Length: 89
Image (cartoon, rainbow, N blue to C red):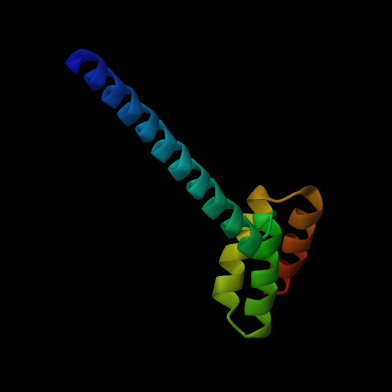
């Protein structure tokens, strides 16, 4: 009787551990999705928007740094736009 009770407790502990790990995984995924909704799906587009805002605020060096990143990592159109904005600096 003791062996079967121990076995049941072991299985219950195992399933509880699996449940908690799965729950943790889904919470982490939800957190990642909420970050994407804040920054937008396209991080490069967000960087372009931020660079424009920095230009309007007169913070040219910050804008230049972001535009250089966009020029390296963006789509063709984003690279062209970043190049144009960099030329104005």
